Figure 1 (cartoon, one colour):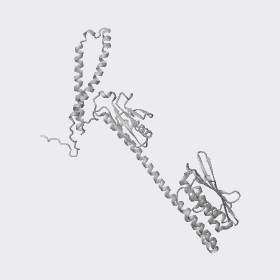
Figure 2: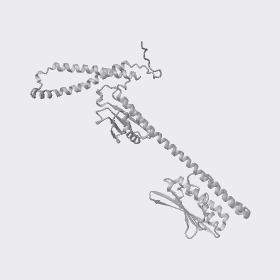
Figure 3: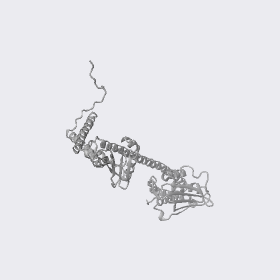
Figure 4: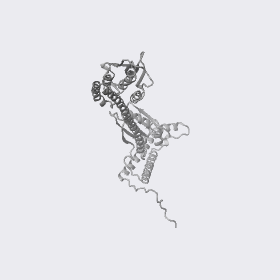
Length: 443
């Protein structure tokens, strides 16, 4: 005696499914009516063409005579064919219901519908959304997922935001999916998706429309999610770069503060021993300078007028120490003073001019600061000139934190749009030119 067969102990249990009887009756009736409606269309076409066939048979020698055609026989054949088709449609529909029960799925209204509608929310504007939908729906991957032998037949109209795809052309005859991107104003929009049956409306519906709609929705949502994730990652990377840039700029600008302070305090220490009144004047200028300068030295943006004022205070402090050996002139148009300019760069150039140009000279010297703005190609450039008539370029000029600090900060702030050029002056001294692009608005 053979033992009864049992399923493997590790086989997943399929839940028992009971279909809604009301939906089952509706589905069986719908299947019979649609299947027979399609058959009637075919028979109507055949009956409409029958006279031509009979006339052709009567005209041909040995053909079928029209007089022998019995209309009752024809009607009986038609009724028998319709009854047979009704039984056939009922068998196909019940087979589909049994297969769904074996898979653990219950019959639903959308599963038996010929047309299924879905709505997809997209995190992009309508134009970007339409381009992404076109990219996703026209590919081979979606055609393979839908069971096509190749990429789907595809039609799109960017002016109406409409995309249609199906197995073959003309698209309206076969089962096809239609998308419409809503022209919503704003950073996001929604997509209306509808799976239409075409001539498959007359066939027995076995969930094809629901499967196609779900497949297209899944592919679209994944495609949009990937691009949204990539966009968020790019935004986070830009924010991280901006934060890192801010930290590097703050660190570089922090180098300038002690560099100037240490030199000034050393000068003040010297004057206290040699000229107390000059030391008091220098201390007054230094306090005023620090009150105005230090709060701005850690900011990323400044103006040309603010930097020129700071440089004037600095040169006033240095003139107390150097006396008649230092003269300076500032020639900056008032219209340029409101333009954006990076902080703590101009003072570094002036400090280099004083330290490496005039202090090393045994004669009085002059430092001239000027600025001009010019249009070059597609950019408007602001150039600031620091010119001295000191000893000129030497091996020690520009070493340390000065020029290297400025060059690195320019690269971080403007890339290749900004430049620093240091060259011998006319006859003697040094000419330093700092060029930056002008922003579209003023500070």
